[in-house]
Picture 1 (cartoon, each protein chain N blue to C red):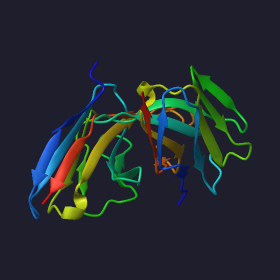
Picture 2 (cartoon, chains in turn yellow, red; picture 1 turned 45 degrees about the vertical axis):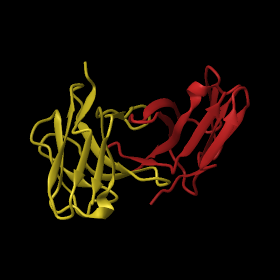
Picture 3 (cartoon, one colour; picture 1 turned 90 degrees about the horizontal axis):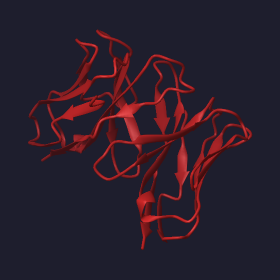
Picture 4 (cartoon, helix red, strand yellow; picture 1 turned 180 degrees about the vertical axis):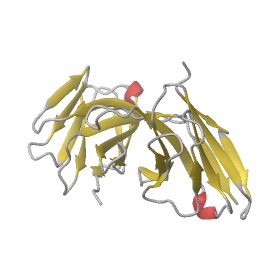
Length: 115
Length: 111
C-alpha cells in the first residue's frame, strides 16, 4: 500500500515550457486535490476532483489545468510555465465521508522551479 | 473566504521547553485539524477537534478547540528535536471535503 505518490519529485522548467505532474493513490479515494505551498502562505488549493471524470477550481486555479480520467490518478498540467509558478506542489486524497472526520492523505510533493 | 491565521510564524526553542502555537479565525468552523509536515514530506494529520471547548492529548501534545469554534491551540510539553517541523491547522470549507489551511508555524527544537 503506497498511499499517495507523485511524479516527478523535482523539475526545472524554462518560462513558457509545459509539463504534467502525476498523482496516483491506491486507497480507492473518491476525492483528490492539488495544492501549492509557498513560504509563509500555507497550502493553497489549485484544483480538486470529487470523482472520476470531474474537476473543479480551487482558490488559485489560473495557469493550471487538471484531468481525472481514472479514479486513482489526478493530473496537473502547466501549459505555459511562469516564474510565479515556482513552488512545491502537493497532491492529496480523501474518502467521500463527512468532513468532520476525514483525513487528507498527502503525497511527498514535487518541487518545481521555473527559470 | 474563511481565513486561518497562525502564530507565531517561526519558533526556535531548546529541548525540554514548552511552547504553544495558535490558530485563529474570524469565522466559525465545524471542526479544526492539525497537521505536521517534516522537511521534504507532505503534511500528516495529528488530530481533529470537533466540539467547542474540546481538549485532546497526543502524548506530549495537547490540542484545544475554542469555545466559539473560531480558534485552536497546540501546546507541546518538554519539546524534543523530533517535534521539529511545520505545524498547520486546517478547517473544512465548502463542499468536496475541501480544507482551508492556516499560514503555518515553523518549529525548530535544538539540543
